[in-house]
Length: 546
Image 1 (tube, one colour):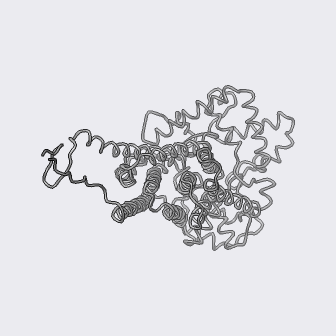
Image 2 (image 1 turned 30 degrees about the horizontal axis):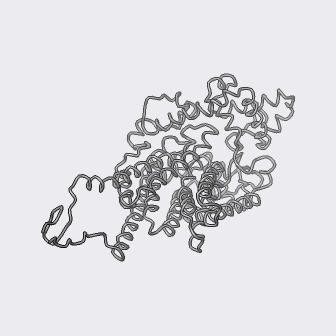
Image 3 (image 1 turned 90 degrees about the vertical axis):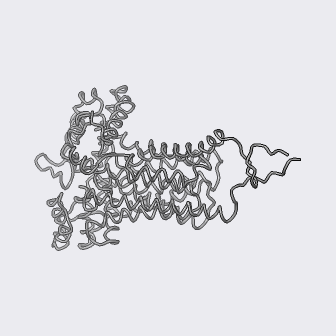
């Protein structure tokens, strides 16, 4: 007679498993916050806390002081205030701010943001309101926004360990990219408009998951989505090329709609973001001085930078005398006005020869007219050189992008000329500084590897690989779209702020996917390697005899 077998022990369901899930989620949140803290400390060690970009020194800080203490508005700057900052650059400190505040400036000497976005001025004003009129406030404010996005994410995705693991991967990518910011002083600080958009990557991930997971509309989720949409809108306000983030979410919405159909649980996050962007557009229209509509542009110049990008094609560079610099493109616009019998417009578009004032007013007098002519120059180049223009975007720019990223990781086979950085040699970190401060885009740092391994294990890798496959696909999509602005202009290191994060995100999401595969395969290997055993009260054999 066969003895009755004792049932095999299975995982306990109910409160115990729920407690284990809560513990894992809590550990993932702690891991994320530790990564944020490590990022903050890394920035301090690299000097990012007290470093200001040229745009902040020339325009944002002077406007914040002019508005707060001398009553200007509409992004109009008192030139006397600006001169205090410009003459002190690059050694602007809290003493400089105090000197500017103590001035008695002339109300008749005015200047504008020449052909640039204005949002970094509003960010500066916000930072000063939160933390006082001091240089460090900008660094503190960036991390405050960063943490606000993380808190909103955690409130919605608490008890979704795979989503919290994705958040940990993204914050680890931001930590990785921080060490690459000092590669050039044209990038450097995280609140530089060229790098600022990294603050909105957590909101982008949040809204993408909300659509893919078909979140039901609730008050808590609406509030969290509104916070994330506001951060994305601010990133677009600071630098209009951050519209790529909106395009990335549009692509996710398209995929979610194809999967699930046109449903409210897919569309409402998009509507929240659309409302935030509509509010931003209204604010921008009513807040700028009318001179911006006439001559100075509400946003930054675009076609000028597209034209410069043709310098990456050797044929077009030689034919049009282009290099990665403003002046050759300016000369092409001048030549076009002359060649089309409009030389009388030169004094309207540019300052008279000998009276240029590049530091305070940029290279043009009327940026609205200049952009119009720059667009015509670009179209002319494309029309007359169709194949070379296409080759510029499909071959020359991707090749340079790959070189820039390889150089950022520490690869030394490329010269400054190979990287098209000859005109910025003064801004590039020296090999010694790179070695001393570990200024590399290095995804193999000890903390990165620890964080990724823990994120994969705590995020439920053994239970299901699907969320990690989805994360890797989403990271690749975000990275590709993040490259659009630099590929439209020129992908040199000073234009690769957020892409340094998104490219790292792709690599680290791939790592965590590998961890998930290994974790899922391990139980199967053990099962196949060991004989099947049934545990009884004393018997331990494959079959039970009589």
